[in-house]
Image (cartoon, rainbow, N blue to C red; front, top):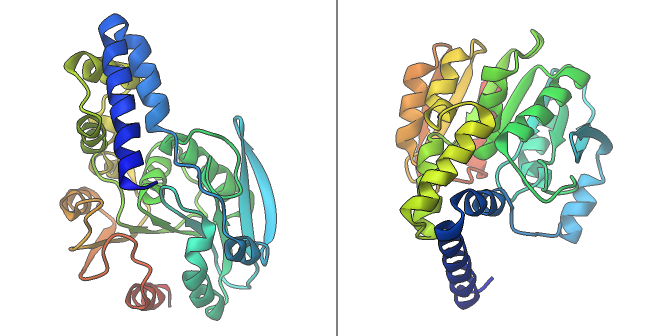
Length: 279
């Protein structure tokens, strides 16, 4: 989407939702939440499809979503790869090559409404439910997750009582503050105060939790599984400050700070770092 079209679309949704909030804040909040949880449509490229088809592909059902699960067989420990927002399992190809060299038994899943998985809407909670099913079905021992995938992993480990076979987490650049994410969304579309209040009320009543309860640095307090938290100083998507708070709250975690890798953290230096952690 070019910049002009983006600004036109943003202006449309801002005007529509703010106007709707003057008449019915609850209706406007529901529409705003639907927009928030809708990833932009993105078709897999031919090379991504070819790569993913090199795996054994399975499907699991999570509510109305059919979740694609990929398997590259190995004789070592079973590891699950959990991608981030508007991505798919092909983003792990360089990590998969490294893990294959170490003979790991590798699984990856596409999030709801991403990759080869079905659906229109995405929430971290539904992603966490998908992680739970994969961990239990395939006896996953380790998870390597990125961005909102790392956030969904924290939700899963905190709220869904993982089985004992899951013994290690590697979390790259997780979403830290759900409140900050929400406020950024509000500011992006310049929501009025009526809409902001109604939106927060909708989220908190739907999940019976406050916005603060969904912060990673609060959720991680309930996680006993050991692991590594990795965040880059130059991340412009998710601030490293939140990972400092996660580090303080995660009793069994170790925090590694990198530099010059940004948010995606797909570079060879990161792969070498994680390889060293896995051996």
